[in-house]
Amino acid sequence: MMITVDIGSDKSDTLLREAHHRIANNLALLAGFVRLQSSQVAKAKRTLTIAEACLMLDEVGVRIETVGRLHHLLGGRLNSGLIDLDEYLASTCGILAQSVCLNRPIELNCDAKPCTIEPERAGLLGLIVTELVTNAVKYAHPAGAAGRIDVSCRSPRGGDLILTVLDDGVGLPEGFNPAVDGGLGMRVVRSLAEQMGAALDFASSPLGLAVTVTAPSGEAGRSAPASTAVT
Image: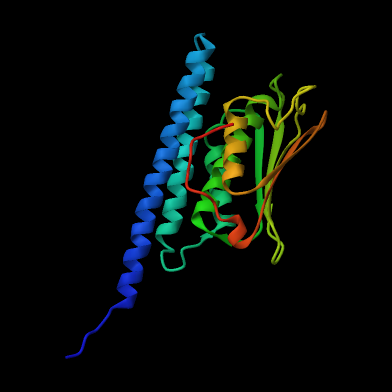
C-alpha cells in the first residue's frame, strides 16, 4: 500500500493557522490601545474639544488600518512568511498622511530601503511609526506652523535594522526624560520597542527631534507575543 503525504498542503495549513493567530494577537493589541486611551481620557477629568476628539479617533483608525495593511501584504506572501518592510512603511505613511496629517500644514516623507522581515517585527515597527508620527503632529509645532516629518529605515547587510522618525519642530521640553516621561504615545513606543528588543535614542534640539529605533537582526530581534503592557 502506498501512502502519499502532501507536505505542501501541511505547510500551507500551518502558515494559515499562524496568520489567524497573528490576527487575533493584533486585534487584542488594538483593543488594549483603545482601553488605555479611554482610561487616559477618564483620568484627565475634562471634556475633550472637538479637535481633540477627532484626532483621537484618527489615531484609533490609523492603528487599525496599519495592522490591516500588514495582514493584506502578508496574505500574498504566505509561502515566504516575510514582509517587505519598505512597502509596508510607505503604506503606513500614506495612511498617516491621509488621516492625522490631513488638513494640517505637515509634509510627511518616507525613505525606506528594501528589507524583508518577520511579520511580528514589521507590525511592531509599523505601530511605532504610527505613534511617533502622531506625536510629532501633535507636539512638534505647538503654534501650528508648517512642518516636516521624515521617516527613514535601513538595514545594512548583516547589521541592525535602523528606523528614524525626524521632525523639524521645537524638540522635547526642557527637563523631559524620554525614558520615563510622556503620555500614552510615548509609553506605547517604549513598550513596543521593548517587545522587539530594540533600543530607543532621542536626539532633541530647538531645531527638531530625531527618534531612532535600533532593532537587532536575526533571531535576536524576534518579537515577543503582543502585549498591551506599558511602562
